[in-house]
Length: 124
Figure: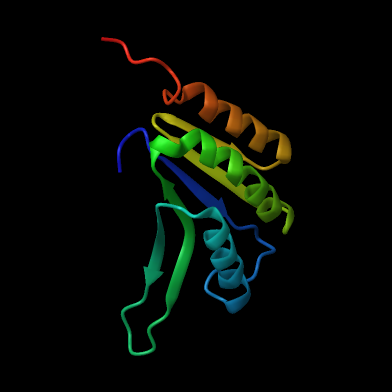
């Protein structure tokens, strides 16, 4: 992953279902399908019973950062509103930001747009 790529982490609330329970895993699967990340992290248990699943960490390539963060905004707002106390964490280069409200998600989007060099002319 390049330093210009960005990572989005979903932080569950204390009221959410258990992280590896069917209900919460279904929410993560739905988010993952809609979010279309370049990759996502998962947890696997090495035991006879196995287990594990997605943990709510998604990675995106920088080349599509601005377009993706705008598309993700709606999905992120929906996930955040589903349970009080949820958070989103964005890691973009050296920038780290946490969102707990719609207004903070808007600020997150603006931050990515301002720090993206996609549309900036390259200096020689």
